[in-house]
Length: 117
Image 1 (cartoon, rainbow, N blue to C red):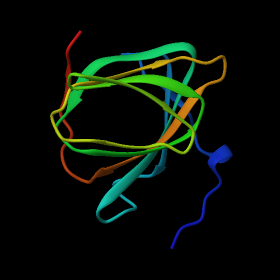
Image 2: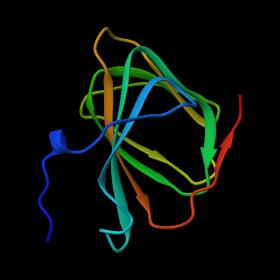
Image 3: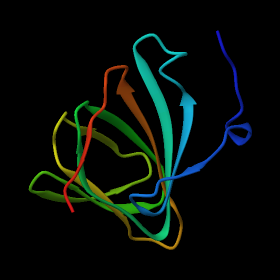
Image 4: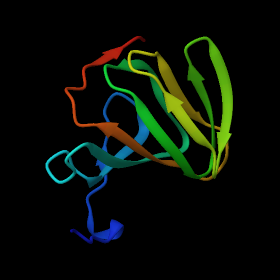
C-alpha cells in the first residue's frame, strides 16, 4: 500500500501540447494493472489531435474543455466521466479561464502515441 500527496509529485510539461502538464500519481511500476495520471491544461492551452494504443478512463476534476473524440466534439467539465477507446483520435482545448484538469487511468500496456496534427 502506498500513500502519497499530490503536491509532492512533479508536474511535467508535455511538449506536444500548449500549456499542458502531466503528473504521475500511480506509475505502471506501482499499480499491477493500471497507471493513474493527472493532466492540467492551463487557460488557453490545448493537446492536439492524437491517438493512443491503449484506452483511457478519465474523470474531470476542474475547468471546462472542448474534447474531440473521433468525429464527435463534446464540452466536458468538472465531474464528467470520459471514456476514450484505444486508437481513437482525440484532442483537448480549454474553454474557461481556469485550468482544465482530469485524472486519467490507463492499462499497464505499451502505449504508442500517434500525433495526427
